[in-house]
Image (cartoon, rainbow over all chains, first blue to last red; front, side):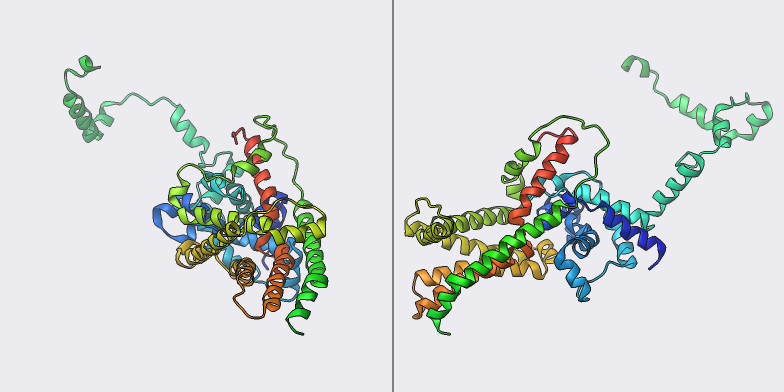
Length: 195
Length: 219
């Protein structure tokens, strides 16, 4: 078990509280959450059923926090959550959920699936299974203060007033001048009156 | 052991055993859930909405606008089955007599013809829901052993009860014994299967409404 995977599973265990346990206990797999999920309604692909996106978190709950699940684990009957599985689930938990909350609003047993997705992301991030772009943006935010990685040079370039163009620089940019004059000549003469 | 002996066991020690496991299991599972507790939410609540959780317990029993049309089988099948099952369970005169014997509580029953109709409606709804589960790609993907087990555990008492009432089989004592045993199996396994939603859904709905209420969402 890698250190990051252990961190991820520990984060899963930490985010499971009484509401989450009651939600997983109540699900009867009626599939109504899928009927509201835009990722399912637009694609028709059943893997986007919201409750399915939570499967690794559900198994962690069952194996750690129920007597039956613990007994099954002791007897070697349960399927443990693996690092590879979490990697495979990353597109479902991040890219296929906008946290819009539709599923949480229609679930007939009252499961707040959106909350559980948010909680599951905590474990996924701890295990390093957040999307690459999100990880680098976070790292940049921590190291430089800017998620976009903006440095002083960039700020300076923007705040320093540009020098007025010299004759030499003018002749070096013939196309841009030509374009701008063309654009101004294309402007309709009556554009003011229509405003 | 013949039918009559089995019936005697089912009515006596069997029932006591099943009820004991059921009560123990419900307490165990409820403690398993509630003991996990909740971390204090350090953010101030956006709105003070007392009773938001309690209202959600009731409001979630109705389909949200547009959903009935989107998933008619799930909703209508669900309603017909649950209501038919409840009517049969609580308003069939022999059932009321049994409850009176155990708890001392009783209420007026419904005519047998109505109970018969409710049972048939519940059985047909269950068959329709089973077919729906087998055919619908989402439900098929989600369903596992626990879902089929829950269906079978619920269907058995309805089917055996119907068979016993209509004397489908010559050995009435055996049919009735099987009916009672199927109920006892249902009771004993209820806390440890998906059937536990009959208890936990009240917690889940309450939490959902409470969480939404804190965010300032009307329920």
